[in-house]
Length: 280
Ligand SMILES: [Zn+2]
Image (cartoon, rainbow, N blue to C red):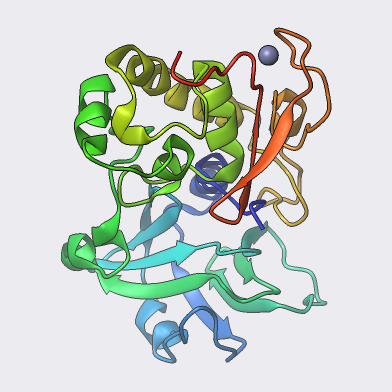
């Protein structure tokens, strides 16, 4: 838990798919027939066949495949989902591939998901904003980053910790457990502080660090823990850059104190109790 794809991993997948399959026309789609987070529509093959993939978007951790004829397919990787690209698909299909989309140029993209918490859903493109999942999402920190004032206003009156606040997809979409710890460490804000009590300079530091940390992670194709790979099977290399996440007991790079691990809302948080002073 906590090692699931976050915005940088999803953005990496988006970029890699975009450069490989945009413009492709769907020749056929095959389904495993197994249920994911929700059942995959049996009409998906019929509805996608013959359509051209025109765009690949992302909102928070959701990928949005835009086809001609105003049809979109939204995808969420869940706990263990991944998209794989094959210029020439291998004869043997590994287990856990639930959707195979073949393009007319022979390339295929496969959605693999052993734990089956992922999501694939067709939505009419004009209805995307009203989709049950997408409409709940807050602004995307890479395309629509909230500034210090906006964050301060969003948090007014809330008692949740700043760590939980950053994980709430309804407030900001895309930050997960790994990057929340990293953002707060760099912003020097104690993860246990109530979000509603942070001062303007702290929001300024946080708003500056959010795109910085996520941007650096995207540049390194994300962080690989257990399942995540890019669409061609490479591992992301941001893991080497993590300063606190999964480093309990190691020395803080700034002050030398051991990094601490605590549990907040059933999820691990890593921080330096000296650098991230309470109420500083
Ligand atoms: Zn420190």
